[in-house]
Image 1 (cartoon, each protein chain N blue to C red):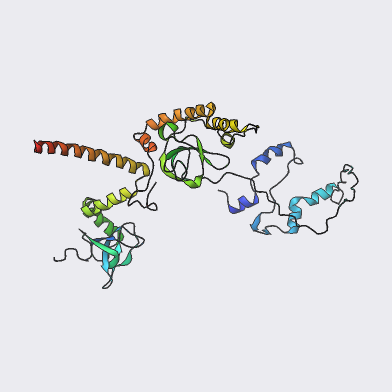
Image 2: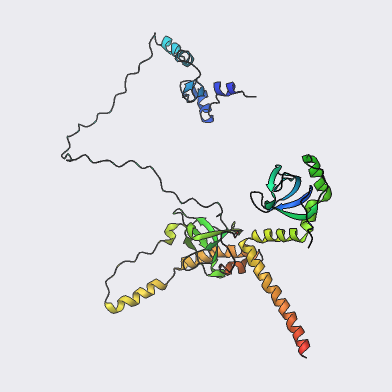
Amino acid sequence: MPFKRFVEIGRVALVNYGKNYGRLVVIVDVVDQNRALVDAPDFVRTQMNFKRLSLTDIKIDIKRVPKKKTLVAAMQEADVQGKWEKSSWGRKLIVQKRRASLNDFDRFKLMLAKIKRAGLIRKELSKLKKEVAS
Amino acid sequence: MKSYRDVNENPTIPSHFRRHISAGKEAMARKVSRNPELIRGVGKYSRSQMYHRRGLWAIKAKNGGVLPRHDPKPKPATPAEKPPKYYPADDIKKPLVNKHKPRPTKLRASITPGTVLIILAGRFKGKRVVFLKQLPSGLLLITGPFKINGVPLRRVNQSYVIATSTKVDISGVNVEKFDDKYFAKQVEKKKKKTEGEFFEAEKEEKNALPEVKKEDQKSVDGVLLKSIASVPDLKTYLGARFSLKAGMKPHELVF
């Protein structure tokens, strides 16, 4: 019930609206009640409304408004990208992207694979059912 | 390093003129102007400077103070023009001249020889088919291959096709001989027949597909089938029809 993810300097967030949709950014300063200054390695430091950000579990150790170099170094040290890709949220997004980029041929191969898998499962299930019945 | 001045004052003589320089200065027709352009419409040198640069003073000096005059060549005698027999009552407007030449439709960048296409309309709608080449009329030449999905060598319009990003290796196939005339309808000679014979004979002629076309199909497909067999699942893919299922949004699909 208590809040676990707080808006603080160093909190990593995901942009959920706008031109930079889907990018990971770090909150570098708080402008006022509604806005934060955010930054990321290949990003121009800008202000963003909190409504455009989804907070993540990841937090890095930086001082208020660090220089770009320090920010990049801190992100590397904390391995933000790695942690994100291992987290279940990050993995889900990667899978979504992969599914969206599937070719027509890829979708066909996927369908064949699903049918094959379902066939194997059903075979095993029928075996188990026979055992239970006997 | 070539500077702005160098490039403009000493323009490189086009290569197809370099050969003429050795033939003699009279023979060389200079096409590059001696007056470099500063801005469009403004040359670097004035009229008097250009007079000097072109050497008109030297040409005049050679010719005794005046520019050489060449008498006009004798023209061949033209026959006397007769006054026309008929003058139209009103002036008719002449249509504007149109120099456009017919050319095949611009091919989408995603369609290259060997691309797998999805046909969207007609008898073979939904079939996945291999693209061979664009014909001079603009239509696309495709083949099933026939053994895989029953689509023969056929023409299809670019607009009725989705291009997928799957490519088949088409290097061994020779499609030189196919053009629009190959696909033209056979013109039958009209013969007078009695009513009874009329219908029977017509049916016979329509059913026969010339052996030549069957041979062509086999030769093209023979090579294709080998390159298709080298990719796993490609044969079943080409044999299956495409259809939209629940949840598929065409504008979001990557083909």
